Image (cartoon, rainbow, N blue to C red; front, top):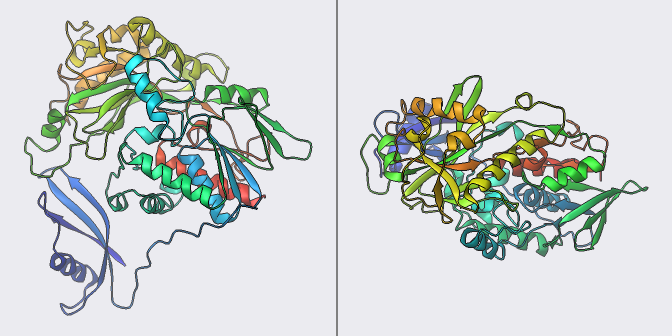
Length: 509
């Protein structure tokens, strides 16, 4: 097998003749040969002229392409249970893997199912009232269910990404996610996919328990666990997979009480940056546009004063949403529907915060720092409205006299973000924005709005685990997993970590 590229103008797919001709040339075959070709990846290359780049694999006659097969989901109605705390990507894919391995997943989710949680998110946007168990972070599908469903990951060493992408297609996602360079599902499509995963798990004998906030995990004398919920229910199993997401602060406190040796972990904090989408399109497509071209994306990394400043969770054609999980805080995130057709582009632009940046040895010190900034934003606006500032005004330390329109439904209030943000963050952002303009022409503009705060980039706490068994140190049989444990970031890497933890738990069952 050999790989090769076929390049076409925007809006045109390669013809079969073009693909076969390129495959023969790559394999050194005569014109009469008919090699098998498989599309691997499709991307837009805008480094010079804007083109579509298609990467194929070519198999010569006699060598067969073997497509990926999803492993069988077994009936586990009467099988040994494994408790899963959390129904986000890590929890869902750990549960699916347990079905492959013949074990029964019992999923405890503090929030509501993916459809019922929509009403609570709508109320949060409309009234600013936060349901601490059902919001943009908590509930079936986790934080990723309503933030575009981006599936791009560089974490190829964590496992085979096909173990995530192919099941997602089987459960309702577009087949394009198998070949798009930056695949996404869309916040309008993800609920159906998540619901189909739940139906599969239940049909094969697994259990889902919503409105079940875990309040205690007790190690029993026989080596197993008793998991208790706020609602008074108790569940018992020999193994527990802890997949609670990056914002479950109460779980960290529980783990500390139960003797887990927690660690402060670096994360990133900054602002949500919103541009009119046409500015990003013009910058990325060199001022041109073709029918059918998608809303343009961008990404960047800058080094400023010894710390990374980078874009995070970029949502082309997207909107901004409130992502707080506690009262009297303001937190923003971005999302896009599958069409990515809003008038705005938004992205987190954040600064790396390392444990040495915050004095002390308390494992919660970065979490407390994160919460303090979120509360400071609320203290200024007094509501779910986001403190905001035009980009150049922020860099010049000038409060904006007025603000451009924003997709953020609760609204924005003009604020001195250059003062509200910690200086270690604000000073680096001020230096970074003009630098970004070198590669993304028009990015540095007062038509861009900065809104505070983007703070839930990843967990600021890690639950250490054995690198071989993946068990929590000092709590054998408990498997910290995914973003909440500090071992992944994003849907795909979290799902892969869930699969790894399921395999580890099954190996000792």
